[in-house]
Amino acid sequence: MNRFEFEDDAPSPEWQAARRALAQAAPPDRVEEALLRAFMQRRAPRPWYRRWSADAVASWAGIGAAACALTIACMSLLPTAAPSPRVVRVLAAADVGFVPLVPPERMAAAPNPQLKQANLPRAALVQMGIPIVADAPHELVHAELLVAGTGEPLAIRLAVN
Amino acid sequence: MKRTFLSAGLALLALAPLAHAQQGGAANEALEVMLLRTSASTRCTDDCTVRSLPYSAERVTETVKVLADGNRIVQRNTEKLYRDSDGRTRVESEWNGKPLVQIQDPVGGMSYRLYPDTKTGYRMAIAAPSGPAPSAPGTAKVAEQLAPALNVDAAGTVAQSRSLGTKQIEGVTASGTHTTVTVPAGAAGNVKPMISTTEIWMARDLWIPLEMRMSNPFMGDSVMHLRNLSRLEPPTALFAVPADYTVREIVRR
Image (tube, rainbow over all chains, first blue to last red; front, side, top):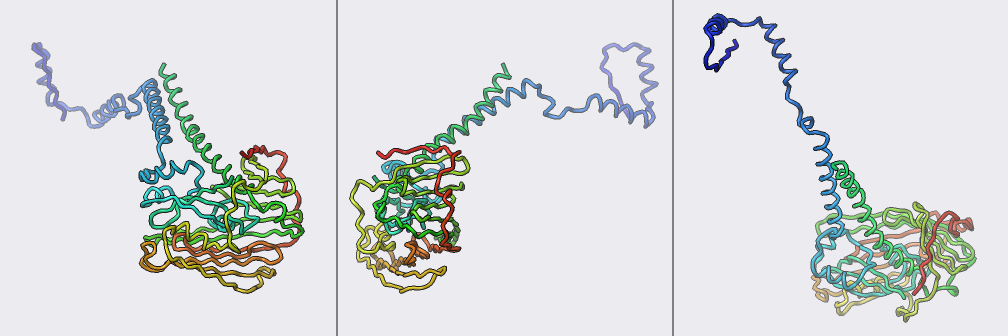
């Protein structure tokens, strides 16, 4: 049963009489369902994405794209992992050109890394995964190795003139 | 106005990875040039070039490294090797997930690194390094050379080398050498002695290593062996740079 309350300040006597007469009246069930269905179709809540205008979508997409671009640009300026200060110092002193022998996270976590030097045969360097020509397999190449305090080799650089 | 803002944002988004890639590209180039310089810098130029002994083979390298947490890293790598009668060599491998071709041409005096996926490459004239030669007492022993690099402060390191005689590998006579380097307990803070071993089998009449086994407590175990060895002359085209490649010359300084 539907009840309707009116807040009119001064309803006319005719209106009050009609109100009293119809207060207990109810529409047939089918009519009520049809009316509710029609009402819901006209007043159905819109999904969230239809509440935004095309301009608003364009603005927020632009802001989002710019933010992503700035994030990527900033990330490119950062190292892939946070190496220890000792690793940073050693790598900076050693300049560029190191071939990593372990994943970056292992290098970052390496304790007390040191730069050591050795003369290694070309065949051994190839076997370590360094892609160089080893036509003279026993020929020695001067190498600088970044070695963790545990002795694990982290990166290698070959030094030739 | 809003569409302009959207376009600018999308353009920035598209350009950011390119900037990142360019930064990485410069570092990669320095690395590639260093590796090319190492290949092109050899004292073993004309006098060491192996002529009239052509071959082709596959080189398979397997490396097993056991980490402190018990995890194991197993890597398997296959390369194709070629040498012609003039002593030119070609190695087809994979480097950083991309195909790499290295050609050493002692006839033309050039060393090449070629990248088939982009049809580009670098070349450098082959020359002996200007610095003093690293000392190699007798036959170079890999384990002996690795040990001082990894345990530079270790005192009392003992190296022993012995001949393993000869054996047939892929139908070729190979002579073997086994080297053991022992770092005594306590020399480098180690509780137990650290032992590194290297075993090399060299083909007597081809002058190439047919098998090599390295075992080092820090670097793990690796085994290299040659398979599908053929002594036929490889096609000449394998030792030339294809005409559609763009090759940049790196001048030695």
